[in-house]
Length: 183
Ligand code: ITT
Image 1 (cartoon, rainbow, N blue to C red):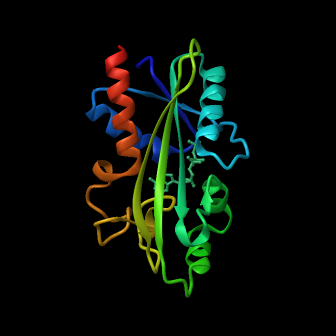
Image 2: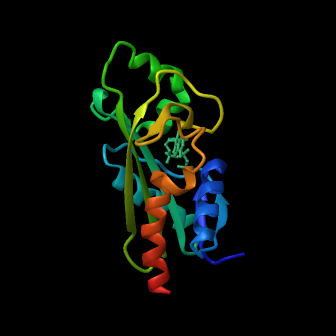
């Protein structure tokens, strides 16, 4: 057990976070819970509130992560609503929204938020540019089957090195650089 918790309802996300952070020398323990997700057009505000809610529940230093898939031709939709949109129209619905639209540029954003109760929430943000595929690939989870990171020919579901190039990997690297320095 470690004294740093990761609060989330999403087991896939935890698995990746744990693997990436352990390679960076940081151990975490899952606190499985559904976190308060406020309605806001700012991912940072959502992440901050999630972290405060998580700390209230865990009462130990805790990190949370808030992600958003922003599609250029849809003015950044689904962005902060990515979780709700995935649960409703899903990947099929996204592909349908982009039918006959030429530009498929998008970005995946990850914000890691750390709260230890005694000071402000610390935020670490990264994003990765990419494209929405024309069909749904097999494998992966969430939006993996439709997001092709820049420079790759396959989606997150099938790239061999997601942990090294993902939005999650680079925001966790920023977090761990800060966290290791602090401890
Ligand atoms: P939490 O309990 O941690 O909040 P969540 O699944 O609600 O889990 P987010 O709101 O942060 O997480 O994520 C927004 C959506 O983006 C959600 O549907 C995720 O499944 C999806 N997502 C995030 N990271 C992803 C990744 O690396 N690959 C595919 N989908 C991803």
